[in-house]
Structure formats: structure tokens, C-alpha cells
Image (tube, rainbow, N blue to C red; front, side, top):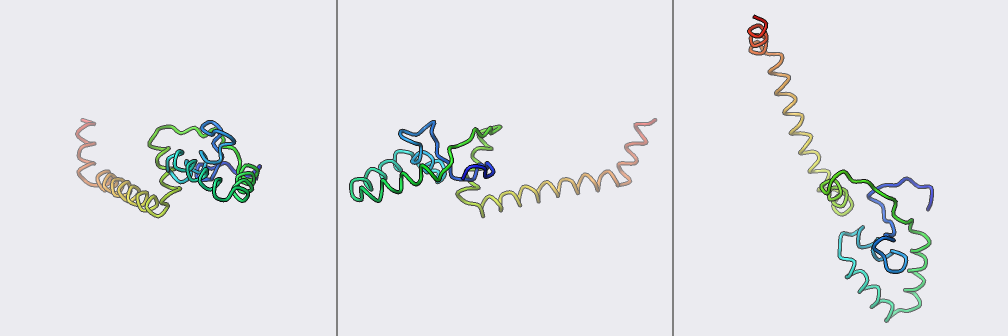
Length: 127
């Protein structure tokens, strides 16, 4: 999978927080849950289904790229990308709402700038 574009919405192995290869930490980051829970499920699967779990973990280690260094400008941006991953339709709705508000503000400013009141203010300043 190397050579594919790096996006904050993809599944990556998180070697910085990982214990072995970072697969469980990467899954926890991707789904927005506690790393402890993912590791607990992995250990339980290992105890009940040893061979299939080891094969899946080994394949995940090979197929999932290590996490690149994403530079988020704020915690808000990091949370935004996590929400995009977990609830894309809600994120899209939130963005539509924000852009609708921004568009309404721009329309209000345009209406004021092109109004006769704005011309009157400009003429008073020029006196």
C-alpha cells in the first residue's frame, strides 16, 4: 500500500502508541475508541482463535501503512478529521451549515456595500 496518498481519514498503524507493530493503536485511532478496548479484544481473540488471529495480525502489519506525521493546526482540526472518519454525513451537514452561514454574511455585506446608505457613509468620510 505504499505510494498511496496520505490522508487523515485512512487507517494507519500507530507505531508511536503501539506495543508490537501499532495495529491495535491504529484501529483505536481510526474508530475513535480506547486502545485498551482494542487490545483487550485482540487478546481475547488470540486466546480463543490463536492461529486466525495471528494470521490476521500479521497481514494487518504488512498491509496497513505506518502512520505518517500529520500536522494538525489545532485540536479542533484533529477532532474534525476524526469525526469525518466516524460520521461523514454529520460532518458534511455541519460543513454545509457553516458555509450557509458564511454565505449569508457575505450577502449581507454585499447588500450593505451596494446600498445607498454605504454611499452616504463614504461621502461623509470624504468631506
